[in-house]
Length: 417
Ligand code: EPZ
Image (cartoon, rainbow, N blue to C red; front, top):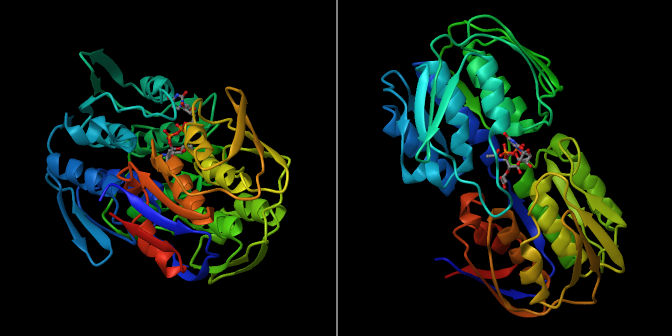
C-alpha cells in the first residue's frame, strides 16, 4: 500500500470532516509524561507518527490505549528515559520528548532525531535554551544524552520562532524550579493547544498565542481530558486541491480561525469562500489565478507545510507566480516530480522558484520524497488529465489519516495500492 493511483481531471464536489491535528497531538502526548497520572487526549488522528509516539511512550513505561478516536495515557510508572529506537531515528516530533523527559525524570538518552529531505533540521536552539535552564548535554556516537541535576527557570530569547524549541522550553519550564520568560516564542496554533492542555493539568502559562510566554514552574500537574483541534494543514491541503480542480467542497470543522493566511490565498487564487463556525465552504475558479508571490512565514503567516500544495496549484495558474520558502532550506524537492506532469517551474535560487502556469497538467508516475510534497503530488494528480501514480506514500500516511478516503468522499477517482 505504498502507492496511490489517481484518475484526474475531475472537479472535487462534496464535504469532508477534518481529522485532528498531527502537530498538536504529538507534543500533547509527550506532555502527558509530566503528570504521572491518566490523561485522555481526544480527536487524535490515526497516523503513523502518532503510532510511533505512542510506542515511544510505552517504551518509557506508560500504559497507552486507544479509546474511540482518542488515546488514554497512564504515565504513573515512567522509567528512565532511554529512547534508542527506530521510532526516534525516523521522527522529528520525538524531539518534544526531550523537554518532557527532562521535566519528568531529569535525564534522557535518545538517538539524534532524524532530519529529513526538507532540511538539516538542526536542534541548536533547543540545546542552547535548555542549557540556560540547567540542562547538561553530551553527544556521542549518534546519541544525545541530557541530564538536569537542577532544572531551573530562565529568561530565554529565541533568535527565530522555532516551534519545537518553544514546545521543549514550555515542557521543561512547567516542571522547573522558578519561572521562565520566553521571548521570540513560536505562535503556531499547535503551541497554543499544548499550552491549553497544560493549563488543564494545572500549569500556569501567560501570554499564550503571543511571542512572549510567562511559564510558572514547580506546580504539581494532574491528568486531564483534552480534545485536539482539527488539523489546519490537512484542511488547507483539501481547500487548495479544490481551487486547483475548480470544484466546490465543504470542510467540516476546519479550524477557520487558524487559517486566515490560507483562506486569504485561496481568495487571491480566485476561490469564493463562505466561512462559518461549522467549517469552510469553498468554490474554486475555472482556472486558478496566478498570485504574484507566495511567501512562507512563521504563524500567522502562510504556513510552510502548505507551500508545496500551493505550488502545485499554481502550475496551472493563468500566469507567473514566485514561490518563496523562508522557513526550510530545501523544500522544493517536489519540483522535479511536478515537471514530469508538464509543469513549467524554474528554481531561481535556494529559496525561490518561478512557476509559469500551463493550461493543464498530464498524468504521470511521480514519487513522494516527504510528507507535504507527497500530498502536493496527490493534489496535482487530481488536477491532471489522465492517470497518475504516486509512489512513496508511506510519507503521506505519516500526516494524513486516509487521504484517499477523504478525496473519494469529495468525488475523486483515487485508490491506494
Ligand atoms: C514543526 O517542525 C512542524 N513539525 C513542521 O511540520 C513545521 O513545518 C515546522 O514546525 C514549522 O512550522 C511538528 O510540529 C512535528 P521549527 P519543527 O523548529 O519544530 C530551524 C509537517 O509537515 N531550526 O519551527 O522542527 C529549522 O531548521 C512538519 O507536519 C534551527 O535552526 O520546526 C527551520 O529552518 C514538517 N535550529 C526553522 O528553524 C533549531 O534548533 C523552523 O523550524 C530548530 C529549528
